Image (cartoon, rainbow, N blue to C red; front, side, top):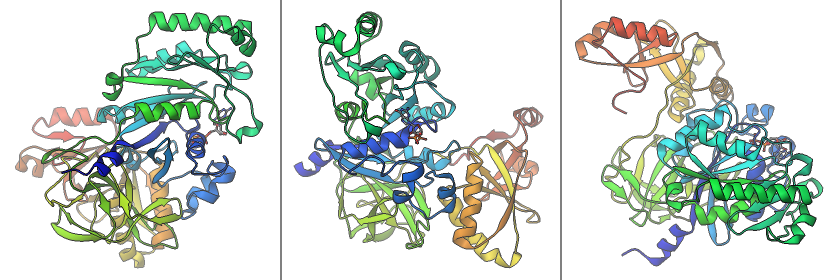
Length: 524
Ligand code: GDP
């Protein structure tokens, strides 16, 4: 029988990730969410640039140089009785498999848009990943204190470029210097924006109804008239918010605000905890696993050498069902090994805290003595597996060569561990004569790989980006593939072929109809 305690803990969990194009305000929103959640005392302690260094890890100098966070972990805070896990996804333009995988651990996503820029390239890519998983997506249109695109146009853009119904739950009153606040279309109240000194405090909020004569005083007669007109248009022409369509990922509720000025974030948070779903069932080889079932968790991310103080490997596990307790004995499905989970921690940047208990939706860092791979399941039952875990097709390729051949052993170790983490994928020429190729989704992954090899394994390498753009795994009958194979294979020995252009691929395909050219290995 499921204990009521577990049911309650599941019900109050909300695990989500923020997706956005760089600079839209993800870091700022994260900081304000933590502020409202009471996790930090004053805004400014998490934010990028000057404040970044105190709280994000300094284990990698590349992070410091760029002031960006490359590692992802989860930030946890409480709000109105809810336990919120915010998965931290890397914020740079280039993204790695890591970002995608992190999204597999989220139950919902917050899409942050810059009001002046609307939907941008990276938003689209990350949105597509959430869409594939069918998770609910909420939208926050940020930077309303700056000149913005017309809100009707922004809504239209979300709908047309992303193919999702967008329903505003708040509506902005003015923008830029004239930004006066937002109208809550559900409670029919006006939230008035007040500029506070550098947004360091909670913004005061006053409310009044749309027909309230006070509205004209609060926002001025012109904006009051425009608001009444806009709301008529919205109520007449736009559909109603539908919770079911939202949960299915077909509809996104839209909020407007200004994170830097603390405006609209708390209102969003109070709506978020109501709308966003708690952890639900997970698809496994044994059917759907309910969160109330006995303990099980999956590994979605690995990271080596998190900090100089802790030179070990961490495996991030998301609890998918039951009650996790530190020190519990579990079975690792892939190897059948019994493991005792005594070294468990949460990790926020450099600070580790021991975790004694965790529930579905929570993220636990486990010390990884090399047993865990991404997608692995640990459980009390021992037979549970995930059907598949997303891998992504690299789009950019580099050759890599070792400066000091005497370091070959350390190099191979680094290559194995970092490819296992998904920092890059590696492809080996089968004749063994030439250097391996690395494949990545974005070029920053190469830099990260190079920097980490040097810092963590003391190995210097030279890398040259090649003109290859595509990789395809070869499938078909064994004899044809063997005859065809072009001397490159992945780290599991599967034959692959690299192409310089889609044209190249098409041509080869027409010449060799007997071979299938797959964007991912067939057995994944
Ligand atoms: P990220 O790259 O998505 O994490 O974006 P950041 O949170 O680092 O924000 C990028 C820049 O936009 C920073 O200079 C922020 O101070 C600024 N910013 C964030 N939110 C707002 C806002 O609501 N209004 C204005 N004017 N600037 C903002």
